[in-house]
Image (cartoon, rainbow, N blue to C red):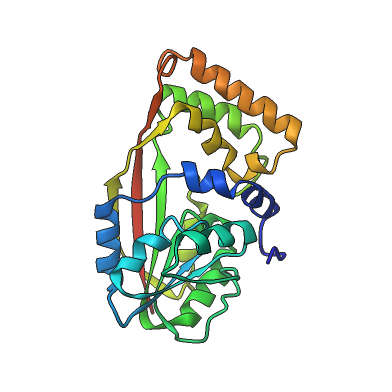
Length: 258
C-alpha cells in the first residue's frame, strides 16, 4: 500500500530496487541480535512486530527465538521478497502510523533502518497502542564510517541527489522521543562492530538500493553510478581491489512503554 504516509522516494526507490537492497545491504551481527533478544525478552509465547521490515534483514534473525514474528511493510516489492525469504514470519501490509494490529496485541516492536521515514510522534502513539502495557521498542541502525576517505568521496557524489529526503545521519528521528507526550522511556543503548565486506562489483548495487538513488530518472541514475564506478577504479584506497571493507557499527536503542 503506497499511501500518503510513505515518502515518494521510499515508495519509488525501494519498489524498483528491492533485489539490490536484499543482496547488498548489511545485516546485523550476532552479538547485536543476542542483545536485542535479551532486552526485548523474546522467546516462545511472545509476539514481536518488525515495523517497516523491508526485505526482512532483521525479521529473519528474530524467527529463531521461537516468538511469533509479524513483519509489517508498506512497499509491495519489498514485502513480496520478504515473504519469499522469511517463511517463519507473518507478513502484513501497513505503515508505522497505521499498524494493522489490535490494541495491546504484541510484546515488542522493532524498527531497523527505518525510523527516519516515519511521522515520529504518530508512529510512537501507534506502537504504544499495539504494545502490551510495559512492552518494549527497539530501534536499530547501521552507521557507516563516513570518515573513510573513499566513502567520503562517494558520499559527496550521492548527497547531491538527496534533495531533502529523510536520512538517519542528522539524528532528527530522535526528536519524537524527546517530547513531553512521548509514551516511551529510554532504557539503554548499545553499540556493536559490524564491518561489511562487499565485492567491488556489488558496491554500485548498494548505492542503487538507496531510496533517492533508486527513484532517480534513468539517465541521471546511470550518470551517478558511472561516476561512482570511475571513482572506485581511480581512488588510491579502492583501485584494483576486488573487495571493499565498509567500516560500520550497529546501534541498538531500546525504550519501554510507559
